[in-house]
Length: 166
Image (tube, rainbow, N blue to C red; front, side, top):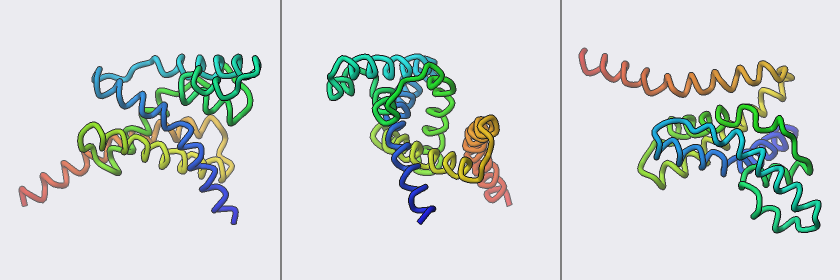
């Protein structure tokens, strides 16, 4: 039962962060470089959402805030300036993990893989917290996930090259 609740929690967090992963995917695909805007816009969305909610319009707050920040603010019931820290790494991890696991088949396939990567990434992070990993090592784990996900296509290419040469 504990594993089930952990999985549900991780998947719900993955869905909350999915709009952020989609934003990172779109800028990464269009600009061909990671865009640092996500670190600031995430917190801005949380702040706008909190201000509009306090003014008495919680539904409008979801539309007024930048999607992922507003969703997280509504779920947590507070906004924190430090929540924007490492959003780019989380977004890139989601996009890269999604592309490694689900492939990159055009724009629609890329969008679907970004959402799937967000879900998988949050499950891995939730599992890290479940084994009482300190927060600073979870950030290291997040970076290692990105590095490993980037290494998988290179390893596949090397193995395919050796198989063709043999």
